[in-house]
Length: 197
Image (cartoon, rainbow, N blue to C red; front, side, top):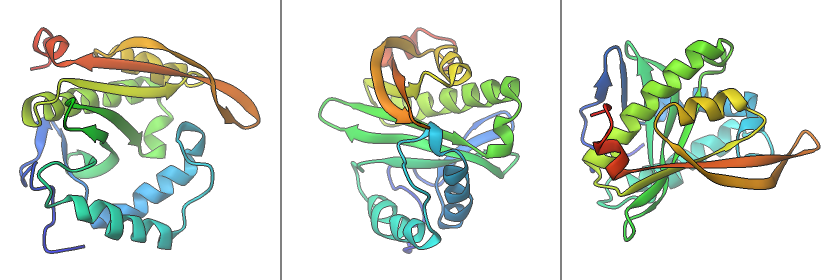
């Protein structure tokens, strides 16, 4: 990647919660992220497996260009436990006029096997991403979309302070079946009134 190794809008200091942290995604994260995405296609807006070359190009041509921007289109972060990469996510589709963005999240596939631990780690990530979005970036609204066949994921999102806004009926086809998408959001005012600060 370039000489600019992180999003200038974030700086180089990670946001922390106990032994967990988020900070700008790194070029070295490209391959593990590609592997997790390919293993969890049914949870993503992705229809085919990503090749190593495609992932490298994406990091070089899409992610890297946002690092020096004052108002990037997306901010992708690495999610670590004790400095070990265990997932990634961020705020995408950033709208700097209306101060909103969409939260994305993907955990290392091995961490998705224990649903109780998954819910805990998703909650920690969402707490950190709200801190980033509302306090660091000054956003008004964060939203997210989850497929209804992953009810544990939807529950974890709602337990993390995101309120269900509605359901997009039969929004996507997964393994030949139509699946609803659940849309949820959190406002800056919800965050300020919560105990997440």
